[in-house]
Amino acid sequence: MLRILCLGNELLADDAFGFVAAEELRRRFPQMDVVFTTDSGFHLIDYLDEIEQLVVVDSIQTGKVPPGTLYVLRSSDIKSSFGPSPHYVGLFETLQLAKELLLSVPKEVVVLAVEAADCLTLGGRMHDAVKSAVALTADLVAEITHNWKPAGVHQVQDSGDGLRRAIVTVSARWGSERLVVI
Image 1 (cartoon, rainbow, N blue to C red):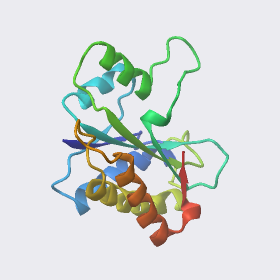
Image 2 (cartoon, helix red, strand yellow):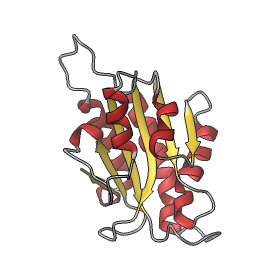
Image 3 (cartoon, rainbow, N blue to C red):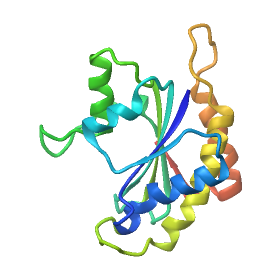
């Protein structure tokens, strides 16, 4: 089973991206398992159980690329992740803990994170470039669900091939400058 997990806070300017993306994905693909939550840390375990593949949609603010640029990465490409303190628990730490506890969580995770301009202004307006990334994200999710197959025991081809095909297709439509593949 594939789940689209959209994260954020609909009250905080560009951090509302996950909420707006979830609404668009539900409108376009009513059969798709799309979940929006403001939860974080260990609370995310409830959304990960019994899922084979997971696409996470969120916002990020690095200041390294223009707002509205979409980062694409697989959790398997992250060598280590650490938070600002030993008490910080994010998505990757939650996944790791769930695996250590032998819970049935996705082995494959793709993160789609849009570069935000402002994630702190309460009631703030979403930046136009960030808002335009909603359609880009929905297109990429559609291609991912079409091309990305779970890695099977007898599968010779890397499941990342489907993700690469999805990225190439969407880059051709939207322009490669809109995507940063990590």
